[in-house]
Image 1 (cartoon, rainbow over the protein chains, first blue to last red):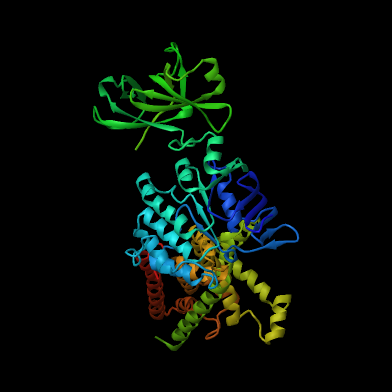
Image 2 (image 1 turned 120 degrees about the vertical axis):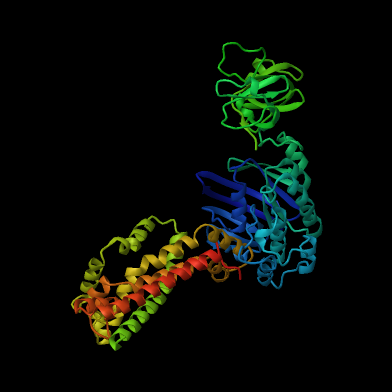
Length: 363
Length: 226
């Protein structure tokens, strides 16, 4: 064990998932904890913060022991000097912005070094917000207050639990520069939980890859991401396509609504009142899209779109692959088995038929 | 209004105040425990606390009277320690009222302590607040509405109590004769005029206390802003 590592060896059962973690995390820079939902990322954060007590193992922060099975050691969360920023900001609703910040600052370790509170507030651009009621702030503003509040406790380590996930994409873009400021200006060792490849590749120096309650890989960000087949610009865990079309009331029949997508039509059983020609978006889960080389006959699936294969990529599960399709100008993803890709001789550039088992109106 | 009526009203007010205070002191930690525990005995404790809601007050009063009798270990100990019997005393009334109004204190507090307050406690710990510090600075203000509801309901419920008080305390003027019993007494003696005035007072006080709760809850939808 090195004196400047966060060393984690812990077993815990959480939501019936058996989690066994073993990691040495250097206490410099940003380490992303990356993996699909339910892989144990938040559990790892909770073990470090002390919100969850393991069944066995040892958790050390540098020379300090925070948990040990035997001889028993347990350091309570409020004595660890861990600053946690939660997914949904968790500002105290009964306090103003200033009240939330003061709450943290009054409890900071007086001996701990850190930035002046005025520096922290202006780094998060809070000067104009101090007197506001926290319930009137936008999601991004709330998260900036939450980050400043955590910094004001002068933590030894920062845990960011999917700080962007509650924000829409416009506000995400707004907050990301602040996270980069956090990294360059405050230079605290940071664990950054995320399932977004773009965020991770932009912010993290190294990655702990998690799956099903285990750490399955770790190392430099670019190296780990490419080893596991991830690349920026594509999120493998959001395997739902959104395609745009127009309502065609003339084609509607049998209580179904017809949506024209390029040259094809998708039928939906939907009890909605939309004008003819209205532009709509459909959400189509990749697992509900199958692929046929020829136009199939005698099949109950009615929704088929002619498409061109643009990509064939691995997924997190080795048995499956994601086939990228273009329908006219639009992208559609299909999850199929690796065996199907081989048996059908699917290749990039081929013209195929996408069979859509389900689609829902998007917003 | 006659002198005995004033004495009955004063006794009732004292009983309701002392009962509410005792309930606040023992009900708060119990509600906190219930809001956090995953223990298997939790439903048993919850059922016991809710019992006075459905049990006839006379049943509760009967068992309390038995328990307070000097021939039982508890009643005997009390007589030995204080030189007075529990039954037919003010202390006996307080014990009876506390048990009878228990759900009115514990249930609103337990509801107030669940969910958001618990995650706020975790947040406070991440800001270096000790559990005790976080309880008073976060949990209590966030649960202000629950506290007001619990306190007012316990107080009002004790004001209106009849069966338990009669069983445990009897009907001793100045000692255990509370307003509700005094009204009964007036009606028994066909003194309708005094029964009217005392009933009206109880009606108004009860309405006003409940009105305060609803007005407060309307003004503070979820919690008090400090």
